[in-house]
Image 1 (cartoon, rainbow, N blue to C red):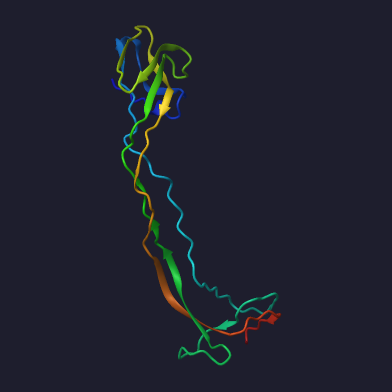
Image 2: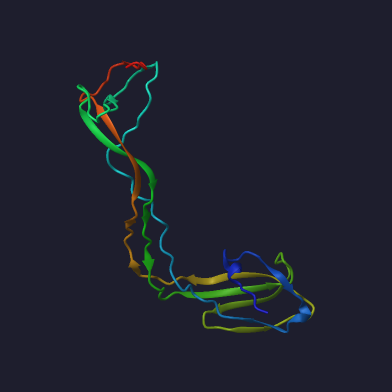
Length: 208
């Protein structure tokens, strides 16, 4: 029977219950394979997309209320022929943003080099790791250890503690994240705006 102890090592030292305990009379010995170093390095967390830059607009409906401390350009919709009326001849065109489909390309690393691992493996007859059967210490990456079993005791829990845990180092193969994809745009909206900022109190009327 093979039992994967990777779950017992993450986090190190916690009690890992063996899902199907092995009865004491079902095994004569326990063979511990040497711990293995990680085969690859994980790149750093996904970077946040850079903020969008440019000119943005927000259209709000007129209401029968006073608007105070307004700072900005007063804008209206264009005429039916698309032209802007006198006094509102500063023309802007905006496209509705439908979806930001941009992503950041991942960074990548080469295989890890170096590193060292020495583990202590503790075997228990109960799932709470209270009754220890055996302590197999200083198991190195080149070691394979065999330990005789206990006829009267099951194998139900395990702890893995690292006496030495030195991960290897990786050199980046792609160390620059690029922005890939585009912003999907919708309908073009036109605003005809005054050329002077309004800073006084404005009375908004549905008829204006």
